[in-house]
Length: 585
View 1 (cartoon, rainbow, N blue to C red):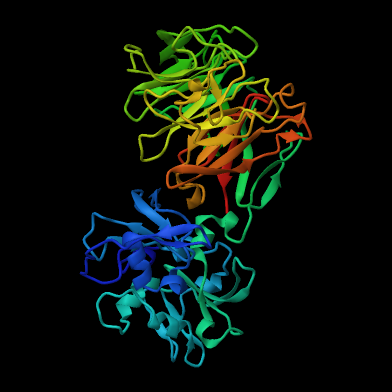
View 2: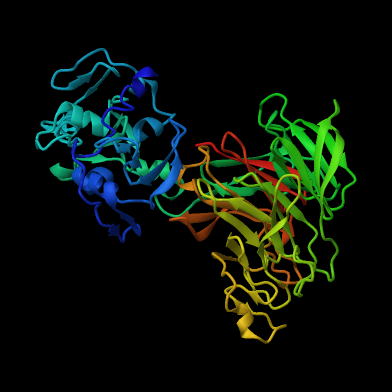
């Protein structure tokens, strides 16, 4: 509705109009959330109400996609709002507030609460733009008085003007109505563009009107009131349900394949191209009726040897099998590639049970092609520098460079959004215990070695070697992952479909443990969220689980791909399925 956007640029402002601070405010930290504020964010927070108006910070400043402008801004979330830095704007418009009241307006509010009112009521403030009154609930106490007494400070005058209140809270969007907030209190509630007012009559006068925790509820609804809660999702074709956090849903969107691994969207028509390493083929899936389910499948090519990954490079389809990197094009009416060009020959073969045959291809933000090649063994000194390494080359396959070495089997890698940082998941060695070594999440940097075969984990010397100096210089993991969980696919989330807290986090598919390594106490077999803070990983959280039911395995996640609507596609090479995880709340 047009009136919802009338104030999108009005009053989303910093405190003192025309005042540019001489120095940025120092860091102020809050042990309650473990987060800090500084610079213009701290100045804004302190000058415009502090804790009562904005609450505690929920995260560190992060590059985040704005759902209104689809632009990226440095953003910090608070319990009751979010703040965006806009250095392109002159002060006082270099900090803007989010419109969380409008964004979080519940879908189940009664129509009577949303309906335009007949007109002004005595003793209330009438807002013609949205057709709602703002009134007091008890004499001089209530929503009207609170709205009028608070606002952003545009000048040094302590009196609060109408435009300053409007800048802080925006127009009313509803009539007052009974609503149960995230703390479980059912109270009289009225929504505004950037706030939610709650009436708590049993509180002292100074606290009868409280602002709802919109920031916490929108930023990460699953943790707004404590630990993440999960719910089960069943489907007629599944032997057991899957579990996802409340607010998420998961459904099967493709089946009948043999071993789907890594996937890519064709930029020409948004069809889904899937590498199948058991059929040694490439399949193209289409959603012909727009319901989110792939109802048509075409064979693009077959006859490969351990086909594992596909990627579109400058519009062309690249496919990586064990021995070759291919480019496929000239697709016929039946979807088959009429031309298949060998871009690069790759080292192959295994010297023991643990030799790695998968190859992963992707195009980087620099336009170059990146290719991971796993080791030929569990622990050995390779004679071929392309083994246990990440390679980089132009799209024609010339001038191949070893970007990084000592990576035993980095099947999945991805670039952190809005940076040039390349991150990869690596599998640790076998046969030294069920509880070691950890698998790894690494920040992969050019010219660096990551330890294998000499070291594992935090540069611990492998028992096959005797010289500790071999482990003195390799890069340490950015995050140790659970031992033997076999991380495969990794993506960073930078879309709008999931709650904002997911932006900048990594999602990892764990293929699961082998029984011979963990005494048949199987673990993994899930998709996890790797939380990032200030650009570095800080911990794991289950995102999709349930493929392991008391050591009965019915699914093994492999590839992850974020769709344009923000949902997450997950391939499962054990059951031949593809799933779609969506935020539905």
